Each structure stands twice: as C-alpha cells, then as structure tokens.
Length: 194
Image 1 (tube, one colour):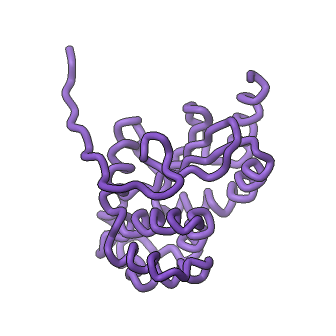
Image 2 (image 1 turned 120 degrees about the vertical axis):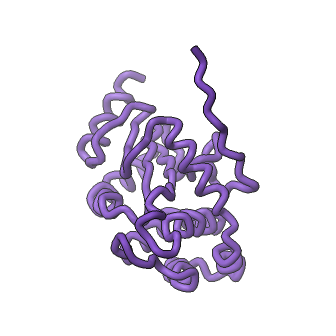
C-alpha cells in the first residue's frame, strides 16, 4: 500500500553554502557528514552548542567532518512572535555573509526563554553586527524574511526524515546522542571503516 504525503514547496531561494538537498547549511569540507538539527529557541540545542561546539570546531579544522546544520522552526508555537522561523531565516542571511557558525553561536548566547517573545528583527540584526555582518544586505535580508520559506522547508524535510526533536545529531546518516564524545567516537568509527 502506498501512502501519499504532501511535498513541501521548494523554497524560492536557499542560502550560500546550502547542502545538496537545500535543507541545511554546510560548514567544513571533511569526508564525514554530521547532521545537526537545531532550533534557536531550543534550550537543549544551546546546551549542545556549548558542550559540543569545541569538539565540532576541532573536527572541522582537522578536515575530518562537514557539519550540515538544519535550522528548524517547530518551536514557533512556544514564542509570541514566531522566533524560531525568524531566527532560522536570519541564519540563512548570515550564511550568505559567510558567518553562519558565528551567528548561530551569537543567537544561542542570548537565547530567549520559551513561551515569550523572541528577539526582534532589530535584535537579530544586532547579533549579526556583533559577529561582523555589517553589510546593509544582511539587515535587508533579515527584515525582508528572505529565508522564511527555506526555514519551513528545512523543518518539513527534517520531519520526513523522522526528526521529531532538537537537537538531533546524525553521523553519516546514523543517529547518535547529542554528546561530543558520542559524535567524536562515531566519526572515528566511520573514518576507520573508510
């Protein structure tokens, strides 16, 4: 029996550095792919960034991995101003400016609590300035919601892959705990098999 599932409309545009399927932003060029499904309003994602960030940075710097970040927007319901969608969209603008990773860290550093308003667009722009995104094009991109359609597509594509929570981490397509040691061990195992 075949089950019909609607397809998410392809986004009008995807950010610079987008993954082949258009549903994430790739950082690094190593042979092992680490997929990180995140939501900028998710406190567990913030914790994952704080704890695993240095390990991921080292693996990228050593050219062992590429990280495909999938900024999702499913926590919009826990914000009064669709913060997850707007933050994910603004991260696409940051990717266009070559500063996705720095911007993601800056957003997690000032993460708003669930259940209230998220950062305003002006505050999202200020976070960008704090990491060197001073080109007026970044502000226009954020204010125009240039990647809102992309954020919805990323979230839909993640759901189709069975991702139902953030952070969800996969190493070469295999789910692993969102823990730096688990990620590093999985990467080492893949490299050993190669």
